[in-house]
Image (cartoon, rainbow, N blue to C red; front, top):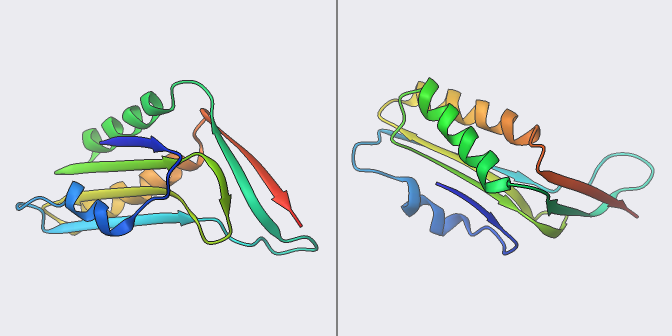
Length: 125
């Protein structure tokens, strides 16, 4: 399942979307806006979808399911203006075994960082 949304990601609602009775392992990773180190800290980041963002997410999800034994994959990307501490994205995987769930989640994180249909404009104070 993939989703692009301008609304805040609610962690407590998402477990129900991915957990299956046959899943022995469910792994979640939330990317969060951080205050960058340096002279001028990050105040917010504007994320805009440009092109078929859901299609790109679906391709990433399919890749994960092809390479690992997974029950489900959940990928969520935020758009709009996000402040320090806001959740940017979610990669979640469920699997009968923990090694597949962790490896697929880690690979999914790397793939989301390289998305071409999300444009990022970081604002510094």
